[in-house]
Image (cartoon, rainbow, N blue to C red):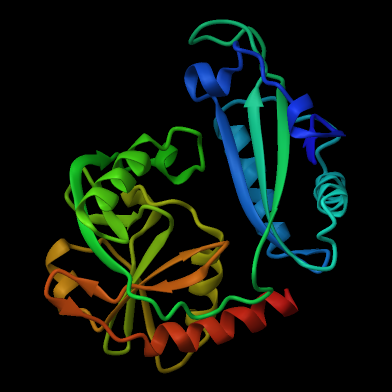
Length: 281
């Protein structure tokens, strides 16, 4: 079951118009989050990111879209899918209502909430190999729009096809300045000694929820030094660790890039702290 503009319906009943602006122009946003035993992980961060993104795209935010209202809408949908006592992946799609060409006739929005099950209530270590390569066919444009979770993910789609065709598990994306920005499915952190680097938002990386929370966690650790700085491709093979973060997997360690193989000690340490932070948040 899904939530389609506030109504719980079956997927067959939730047909989108061919004039849907998300389909026609990519005039849409999405938010992906975890729900564990009826609790939305990092809900306040997700909510304010969604509201800020809608404002940036000049969408009309409904007066009803309070944190309490959307939380209830999400949890009702989770319950209708019989996952209120389990782990669930929730995706919220927000699109501007049909009308107009590039210039919309209206600013009002529609929304869709879908739910699927997750295997674990915690962020767990994935011990399988995770080899990456640079995706250099197309670049992410640095700037504000690239930090949003908009429906325009064609670079991620093409990068995923490239990875599959060449036997990689993931790819790292570059911006027009040839700096490493992020992975196909999340933010990246690079570890060298006690220094942990992640690209700044000004480089065009996604304004990720786990990225934000890890920056806060690392900032409180006396022995580790966090830097939000551009990452050159030349730094990748000199790093001790590289890991990817997103709201579903939490932390995914990269095991190999070209001839370089990585350890995952700090990633594992941070994963434990992230799980604790998520439960207390």
